[in-house]
Image (cartoon, rainbow, N blue to C red; front, side, top):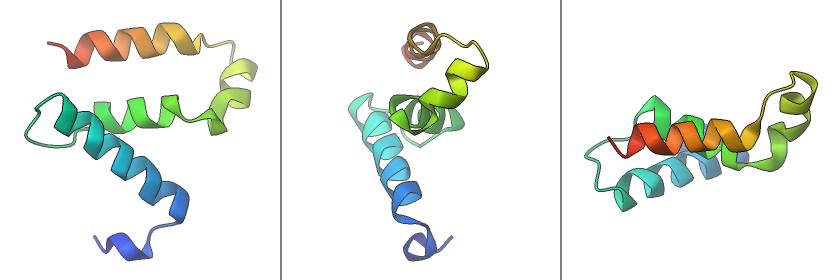
Length: 68
């Protein structure tokens, strides 16, 4: 994958996922790291509201999963 061809927003999310993995001392970036990076971004807040999804609960579950 050519990182430079990704949109700036996607590059930012990938870098955030990388930082999450590194700070947790994980050897690789997983889909859960990407999921948390996306949830942590306010871009999807409107979508989550329309779907009646609790962002705080989703983040807490994601954090618990990553701590395993």
